[in-house]
Amino acid sequence: MEDWRPTSPLLNRRWLNFAQSAPPAWPAPVSSSEEPSVTPPAWLEGAQWQATPETTSWSEPLPTFPSTINDGPIDPPVIRGRWPTPGRSRMGPPFLDEAPQDYPSHLAPVPRAPDWEQVVNGPTRWSPLAQPPRATDWGKDVAGIECRRRGRYANCITPGGREATVPVEDDFPDYLGPGQPNYHYYSKPVGGARVDPSRLMQGVIDNPTPGPRYLVRPATTEGVNNEATPSFGYHLLLGGNRLPLGTPQNPVMSYLTRDQTGALMVVNVTRPGHGLRPGIVVRYVTESPSGATIQNEGTGLGQLQAPGGRLSDQINNVWNAQSREIIDEQVRRSRR
Image (tube, rainbow, N blue to C red; front, side, top):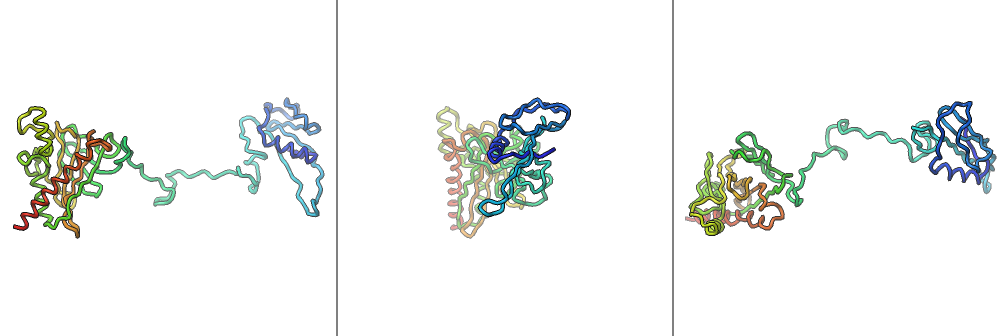
């Protein structure tokens, strides 16, 4: 194919405007013996039409340009243009797949990015990250205790890495964790007490829930049925519903177990009839230079405790007062 070159600077500028605009309709491929069915624009009179089975193009003899401007050498502009055949993309004249490697175009081909499977193992700026947990409807709790059920047992792990396995009811979900509707997690540490940690843990075992003392028994490895409603709320519910004393309102099973390191833990699991079911509360004691601390971590799918709920803070904070009572009682005993 011959190069098309304009005959004058004015025609050159017009051709540039024409070449950079959308191409006109082109005919179907024709043989070299046939004339093209597209008539060149009027301002291209004198240009030579060429038609081949693959392309349709214009060409014209090379015009004469001055060799210098303002006493300096210049290179004459060269314009090449060719209309593509139907079915081929027009990336600008000439086609990039036929252009030399050093062709100055911002549309130069870009190497295809590798698939993630082709990325080398190890962290890089482009390494794929694990999909983060989906936030709840309120967009707050995206991390917390996760429980996975296996048969009659659920294995739960806290954000700090403590694991516990306890029996659960038949309607306990197969997975309880971030991403589920109304999922919530809270941590209520109470401590800094100058008390033997083992004595403090014994106080948690003896008082596993904030329910009335006469309805709460020590946690055991087999589990014991306890009332979890704080004393004031429990009697208010009984009076409002005219129920006899001792009627369960928010029952839980209190289990005494150990984590993967052998440290004692108390796990309260909601039972049928509990208003915040399903849910669990993990309780254990930690020691630091400031003293011993009772750790209270809870999670569940109860709507009243969902992030942003009007009663969520009041419900979660019941462990603060109950834990402070345990600490005060152990401090008094240690002074006897």
